[in-house]
Length: 388
Image (cartoon, rainbow, N blue to C red; front, side, top):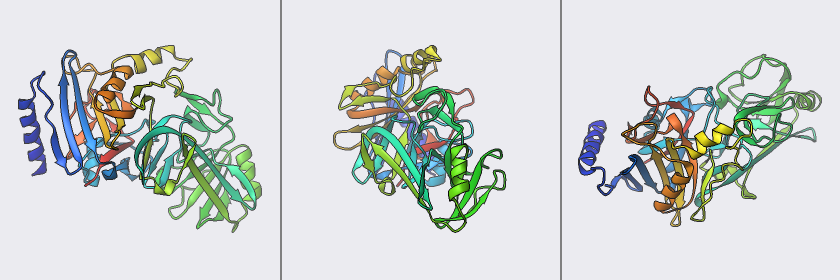
């Protein structure tokens, strides 16, 4: 079967790959090349996917926000040819940073953090910002976020009013007492039970206004959940049978992205390369938090497992894993070393897609790297895959 063939393929590559041997590239499918690399000294073990971006899609664990799933399980579930873990996430499975799959926004941006954008023009890497609003009975109110717990802003970088900071911060979850958050059936969890007001929307119309804890997100509609001034807005404006016009917008480097046309927008950070030059924007993207000065040393300057994404001049998408935390097998890389690796592989623009115990690559449903968690492959929130 397929599993037997891939195991034999990996065994053959292992025989061909002594530590100093040139890399052996395998065409896994049309438009999908896989190259395992062993570098000395170190050692460092690297896996590279070279992909036609038209084949690449995002996958949400369990088909919803709540919960997590292994990269290999997600890949097998959707029949993926190959793939890697996606963006950062909380323990609940909630993505941290922008995630949009097939034109549907599943998580808003951590303001200005770098992201991979796959759309009608191919693949690109750039900073992403989110803006959203709802207009009911002629009254407009901004939407603070989507598909997350109202009042809690992971990694901060929200839309104003966040405490203690509105700037991205990797170690904080900011609080905001006045938020309007949009939930859909994809959320998969119950909204907050205390405080605020909820408005049920069906077919673009306010169906009901209710107290929190009245029930789950309706299967056939949307839920606006508000606190503080957003709760007052819903009480005053969201009259039953009123039209509700929702606008969700993303911009990249100041240019609007037509959200319905984007196959995948997935963030993490920080940026590693800009125009072929090393440009590790760790501080600007919140990875040097003043509250935890040691974090920069651990996350940015120390060698860790890495998942990386980059784009070549010809539009080829690179998805790369670097194993780490495994003495004798692979030491990992600093972010500066990861930037130089991506440049050596031909990337013009690149960013850090993930890392640590989440770093996983699968080919034909089989894990081809060595994840660093003692228990093996970690369950994650989402993944990036080449589909046949």
